[in-house]
Length: 148
Ligand SMILES: [Zn+2]
Image 1: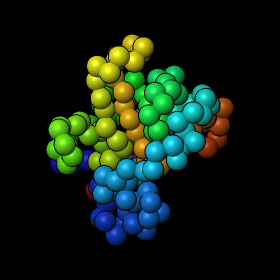
Image 2 (image 1 turned 135 degrees about the vertical axis):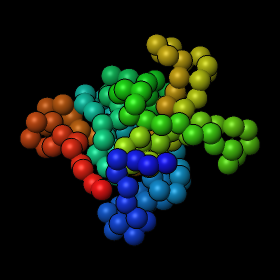
Image 3 (image 1 turned 90 degrees about the vertical axis):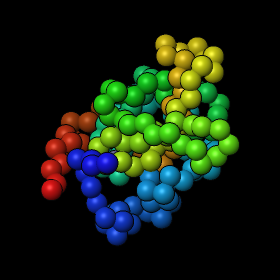
Image 4 (image 1 turned 60 degrees about the vertical axis):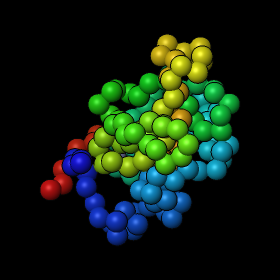
């Protein structure tokens, strides 16, 4: 599957820490309750750690007490892509960054959370970069990566 951002494994390894590479590029899972983003209430955007694409907003983050940052919706449907994941018992839906194909986490439905979608995007905090609204103008350049 082609993504706007495509890099070789060597390139990813040089840009990401070992832990980030494991989760983002090898579909690993960070330790539960290891991400400060799970309970952080900063208002802003959560962008892909690998490519910088904006993926989620803080307004859709909720406390699911599951050990990982939980969102009930992506920033926009075209920001993420979904893959069937049969790597463990049962079938789960894997969530990846649509811009670079990096693994983010999984999405679960119908768990009864009091959210507008009844979906839980269970996302590894290490896959995300927090971009507070206040600092957006001077820190983030808009995602205009062109490669090819
Ligand atoms: Zn990405």
